[in-house]
Image (cartoon, rainbow, N blue to C red; front, side):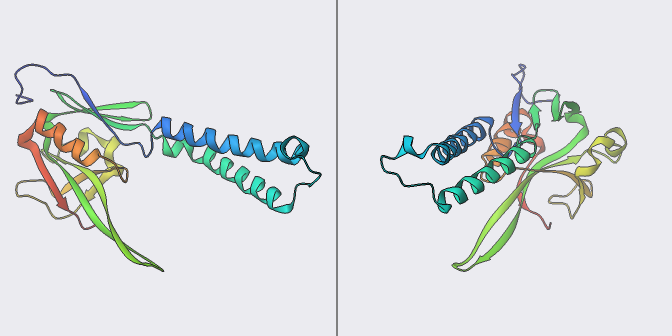
Amino acid sequence: MSSTNAAKTKPVRLDFRRTSPQALLLGALLLLAIEAALIGYLVKPEVFTSDEMQPNWVIWFCAIVLGLMIIILAAAVPAMLKKHSMTFDDTGIHWFDRGTELTIGWEQIGGIGVSWRRRTTSTARGSFTKRKYALELFPADAAFATHHPELSLYRAAEPMPAPGLTPYRYRFMLPPLSPAPAHAAALMEHFYPGKWLGEYERQS
């Protein structure tokens, strides 16, 4: 049986994108509005002020810097909106990657868990530690690599977090400051709790 649920349930998606399209659009509109105001002041300062003060170098500098920020943001949009996602349902997991869909049945999966790694950053005000999370899929047997060569870039070898697993896993990094780890746990508890490995620390 592919799931502990007798009745079929609606597929649920786990999103891997670093930011939402709505947040990105809001930020872009805000930057464009500020840039438009700066350019308008540079072109026709009399519209924005009643005196004869001419635009100074500070306004020019702000306009140029903001324009560069908008260009950098536009260049980073494809990476920020990578369409990496997983859909969980009664049959297994469906991996979506830029238009490509890959289905992995529950019978091909030995276990799924969320790993984390501590990362300490030092600053002038001191050091702080944060965790980098990843969803890890352990195949049921060695034939998995042959059946799914598309996932070779995500393959990693480390000591097993639990006995009976393969010596390698497929690691999918989760976005920072995201509810994805808790969401993944809820999905596994719902669709196939017997294959859920929980959270554990990884080496790299």
